[in-house]
Length: 216
Image 1 (spheres, one colour):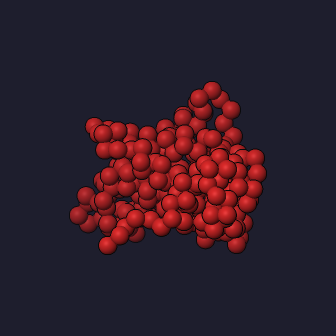
Image 2 (image 1 turned 45 degrees about the horizontal axis):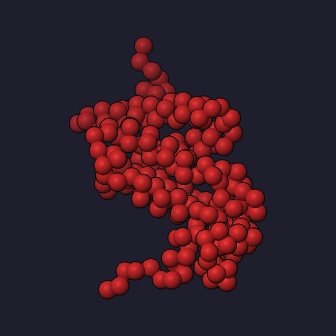
């Protein structure tokens, strides 16, 4: 069976990141596609066939390109010996570095994906991003942890992304500190989850009751 991507799929993969970088100047438009094609020496007609016409789909294509670049960067050796907290931190930070040339286009992309008609695309790309990052980190969970981990990392990444977009500090120092705090919060939650799961007769209703009426 031939697993090689089609010619148009090869173009999509090649042009995905440059479209985002050119969207800084041209928006998520056909002009950004043309500019990216010229930059790469790709026939503009072929590029138009390969790239979706609507803004949300162009953004989805760009995010897929970021996903692939992230997976390509993190060979097993790059994460070898790191604790899970360190892995997640490195992966989120590298993702921001990959997107830095398109930072202003990413800001516009969030506005586009926030439109009601594009909400499904926004949710899909957010979940896929969290899933890719966890898989790079080596997560193989299949139970409810599979979902809770992705929900929490999705929240960490989304909030960090918003800080990054407005960060004017040298080396994005403000974003770096924010990311560390958010990961610390998640690790505390994971520790609590582990402790709760170790209780033989853990009662959700009793736990919620204690939250509402703390023991004195």
